[in-house]
Image 1 (cartoon, rainbow, N blue to C red):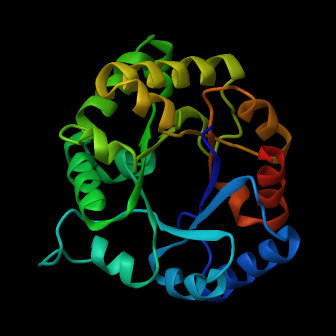
Image 2 (image 1 turned 135 degrees about the vertical axis):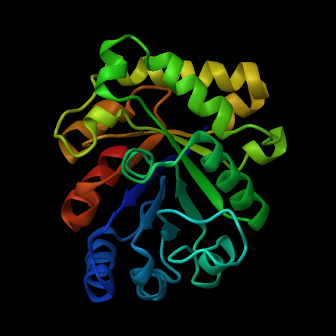
Length: 251
């Protein structure tokens, strides 16, 4: 059985004091979630404070991005090794906002995925189509290319450490949510692509998350689909009661 994974992407929100307060409130409300893996992904400057606050707790730490080189003249970038030193276990790669706003490409995402795996970080690799692409019936084409190019050269063994997040771009931060049928169809496609590309074992093992305006009142229905293994949560992860509500819906 694939364990449910709920990951919170805080984006450019919450300074160290605010982030610490949030996870403390979350832990007070929780008392542990025995059946769900929980990850929070703060901004870079907030990572050390949150790492200290979640030490020894059920919450694991992730980053929102990283560079594919170990070191060098890459102003404002952060390496995999740096993330490990502050306690990160996970890293989000290829988020649609990185692609749309900062010009990240599938090739660039691929370099980061391979570096994360080599360094010992667990990548959450994001894929998803824009509204124009969905309306042009190109969803499968777009997602397939992002998977093929973003995971190029990743071995079957390495795929055991990869999580995929399907985030329809048109549903991120808009309040719109893909229907169970829409999300389920893409998750089923991703699962079949994994089976064809990496084999049945990997297809059954890799967790595929849904992201896009996930909230406590829609989480249970989404997570009831057999191919949806968790959620990558944006805005609702910034409030302890909402994030805890999503986790409890997953349980």
